[in-house]
Structure formats: structure tokens, C-alpha cells
Length: 146
Image (cartoon, rainbow, N blue to C red; front, side, top):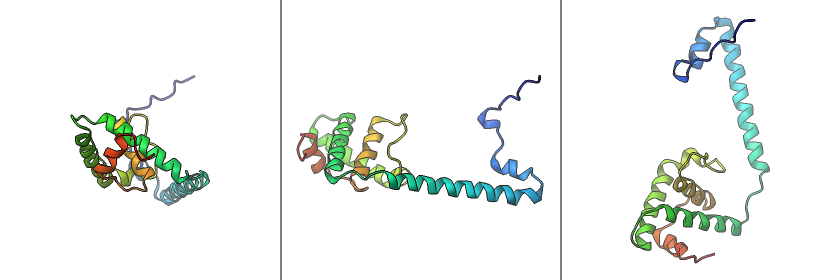
């Protein structure tokens, strides 16, 4: 009985382009069409699964958003509540401009994400992708607007 071939490290594994390029030309189109169809079916399955999830009520979204604001503010250093709220507003706007477009369809971020990033994601997700101003954040830090 022969041993199974060793799996090479990630940086030595061939790319899909290398694998398909090594195929006889008559098989390339078939394999690529199959891969494209599999990707399309997976995207449709994700969309169907998302449609089956019930949307949270407005009150539930507001509660989740407010809880995420409190978690995010706990991650921000600052001497005063208004200073932390202003820093959080900047971080929230930065995330909305840079990371949100890539992560907007995720129900939650992966476990390895920082608590602040997870909270920023939840705030935007529960607030329709719109960042909050620092005065709202300050009010929420005091436990208001439930």
C-alpha cells in the first residue's frame, strides 16, 4: 500500500490558472464552464438562504444597534465620553467608506475579527449602512434612546 501524496504548503500549491492551463485544450472549456456553473449555483443558494432568514423588527434592530454602540465605545480609549464618541464616529465613517462594502452581506464577521470591528459591522448592519454622528453615539453611551 502506497502512502498518500503529501499536500504542499499553501504557497506551493498551484493556482487554478496553473491547473486549467496544464489541461488539454479540449477539456479547458468544459472544466471552466463547470466551475462557473458551480459558483453561480452557490451564489443562488446563498441568496435563497438569506431570503429565508426573517428580517429583525425595527425595535430589534435598534436594540442590537444600541448594544453594538456600547460595545464599540468600550473599545475606544479616551478621557471623556464625548471624546470617545467623536473617535468612534471617525472609526465608523472610515469603516463605512472602506470595509463595509466588502462585508455588508455577512450576518456577522468571522471570530478572529476584533471586537471593535464586529461592533462597527453590527452598527452599520442594524442601521441600514448609515454611520451615526457623535452626538447620537454620546446619547447612546449614557444608555439613552432605547
